[in-house]
Length: 155
Image (cartoon, rainbow, N blue to C red):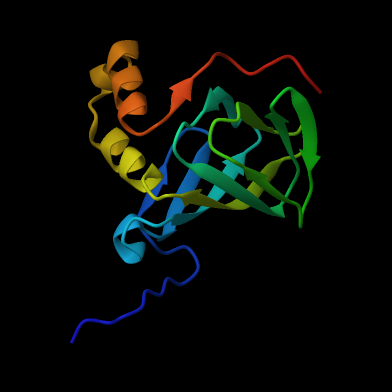
């Protein structure tokens, strides 16, 4: 009999190790029928994600450890442990680990689901594909990630 629930222990779940972060998929698109994805992201001090937006999905971030600087719709927000930030569809945003913070850890909810599928496809790409801006842009657009530029000047 198949379980009607999902359960992941600490440091479990499909995971992706990148240069600046290690992401665990805790609740996948398959688990929710595409309603949402829940992920744990362990960020190194070098983590920075440039300005982008999503046309059809929202993101919610709950900070578990460390401090992050979010640029959201023209404002800088310093998110410390226990902070929660919800960004609706269509709102430009960027994120980086705050200066002086060695690392950070957060939960991320993507609604509707799909970011876990983006990471799975990214993980399957060859080194040459990962270095091809056109291939990365096409993958991003397929998964509702509209890149808008580098990290804005800020704190």
